[in-house]
Image: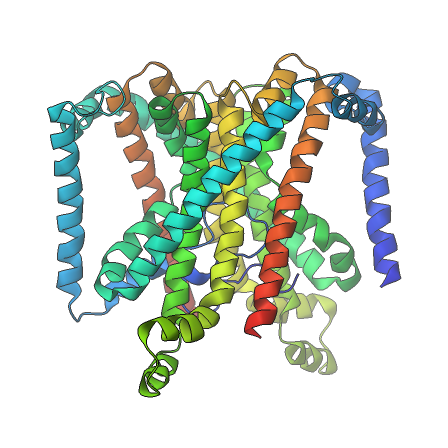
Length: 249
Length: 292
């Protein structure tokens, strides 16, 4: 075990060292050696290079929260609608799945045209990306509930609500939570993609600004900050998933 | 890390839609729709009422949209009526088709390279246990990372045009294929390997006669997932810093407020990608039936 950890650490150190050497030899401006990244990160976090970082970070987080909330609400609603009403599920499930096969980014220009450059188009795109995996996971979850369990529950006289809460939800919870986690990751990506493809505020706008002015070290520092947010959100989702796994046994 | 991505090539997945990877995936193709599409159409009972409902819904949606647009409840600058979109097909058709061809060519190059690299690296990492344990977390992390963050960097390093699109397409396509193949190699039935070894198989024979055939389903699954990822990567580059291709066409139409043309082009590229996914799905089904 400890040997594996050592090997992983060696890989990280090795990659960083190679990167440092390569960047210095080839083009320090373009490849940004790690030794230049750390000071840039310090300047970014002390609000030296981008004093408006907190506002932009806040805006991005707000966009993510709204987009994800919309995706969860409508994804769960549509998923249960399609799962519980068999005809609807068989008619619209395949259509939903087919739309999911389209690389969603092709819809972004239309959303930008319709919602403009401000936060609304990012929220719409984050919602669109997050909605599909949630709806499809709920649909799949409802379908994977063993019908015998439902029959037995009904035979023992449990009502609709009890059957739903005590039988159906536990049986599908793991799939549902998996969908919620994928949906969160995709909502985050949607908002960030939207910001980078065109925006005036938010983390993506700062990234574009740094890139446009060739402030590459600041750009890498901004990427690192964004990655921390992404990883933290996913860690939260993963904790939720483990909890669901334990709860359903 | 086990079971991070359910391999859909194996028949254990209950439905097409349930197979989303639970990892921090940032991509649109976890649920492969083709299986769902055809699994359902195979049932014949009340299939026609399902079909009818689908047709009625689409017709009602288009008719309602036309009505709303004609009545002037939405700004025609942003939401064109369906009839205008159809008319716009004539105007933007040629441009969009050329753009699509350009995009698909780049996607194909990126896809072939992703599959070759992904399968080769996946087999190497999958069969050498220590290497796999050391490297696998990084592969999973790279797969889960939002690749949009490195896009400006890719464009700075590789400039504008074909090369950044192909590189970025590979960045999208490589990791899911690798992860699926690593999983496939890791899960090869140990007893097969033991039997082959005890019967005196050389490492080369082991690879060729035991591991490779056993890995085919996960390679196929990787190939299905990879294509949409590559297409996505190429389109994003074209939108961000394109000078040609479908992504560039779409963002140009949006920037010139040609809503009807934009809708027509979007419909074209959507149809094309659905068609690609479905045909890969059919091909995959044929192949797995042929394997038995």
